[in-house]
Image (tube, rainbow, N blue to C red; front, side, top):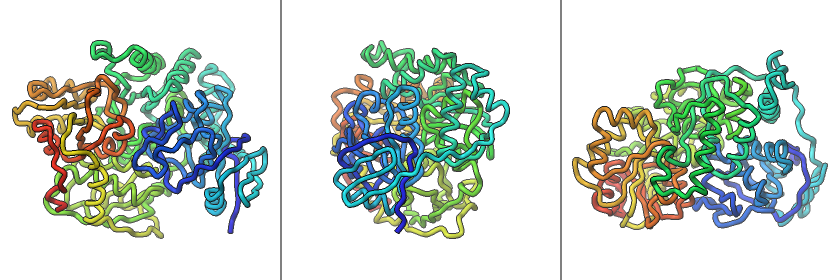
Length: 558
């Protein structure tokens, strides 16, 4: 048995152990104001991690988890320590920012799997400067890794302050994360995508305004994720200034730093989408997975805050899926292809694939005959990111790097029975729905047309909201699709998306909603506090018109 422990970030802590064998997305899974786990699908749902030694293999899901952890550290609701058994970047970076920029140290440890399993069975634990003590377990803790980075002259100049304190701070963060990831050097990246512009917590604003006030500027073309309000219209929509004001200030801080106000979680729909093999630095989990998997571009799943650091320096750690050997599938999923399936099949399969490969890149086999469209793959990748920590997947016969399979890859099936069980899990709500939610990730022009076609001139009976990027909205307006939707009573909103929408834009009287998004079906109950129904775009249109979503399996699963 190998028992070992190493500091990723040093510190001291003591407290009750809170352990799980299932990774968790802090964003969408944890309320930063209370420390409570709000992901209703997670074994720790309803538990508080505040002040406890959190023991889990790693994290999954959203890149915004770093901001959630930072906010928890600043408001006193963070775990006393984070103990992982796998490499972890997202909340580790939040802890790094908390200690380095705000003087709030929070120890982060990585244990061997055997030691991690022993600690998980303990009731309490204590971490000192060099020892981990728990029930029947005493382990020496090795110090932080101090791997040497081969920096260029320009890297060193930025690190030493030649381009200002903000750039020096960005390089310090970047180099620390590179060492944590085992990188030996940095590489040039051609474009960035910022996820930290979502007002997930006050900490996101605190960090961004501090960097902007220091004179931070991006040096590569950098797009921005969806934000938390409709930038131009939030006041007219009744959003309280206590929320709308900070959310707008956060977006504006990134624009001041030179980011493009694209405000979309689907940057791959823009005409600036990267080419196959292009080295980029994107954040936002669905965008990262789509870029790597479908476009064949290369980007790590950069945590919030690191996304800005890479955009400011034009550099990223050469590690993870920037390297060929780390883009191989380690698990082959053989998928039963049902007859007569609709578009709901793709997010369902993405969600199940993440469940089946929570910690490794999978190859999905059996889907080529279905000829998935970019919209199908968008839905698949987004749902996959809710249940897996992997930054990409492969689809045999479809995605450009599906030939990359590790020699020792294992196999697992995804059966029709698995699909039926997954469908029931994502359809826990009642038949009566009060809201239809489309656009997580942001809807494409083809999805907007498809919804208009499915409504076929009928008026919606319940609030129906589509979120889409500004570029898609302009195209929809120019071709008449936007008018078709609005004439039917559909509201089409720019800038924000379902994973950041809040009341009163989210209709306050809603008890249950329906969505075509596997991502929002997963996160929606925790984020909105409402019951959720899930189905294809046509089923969503019928629910919009009739207010009902029958609690039966779709015909292709019956």
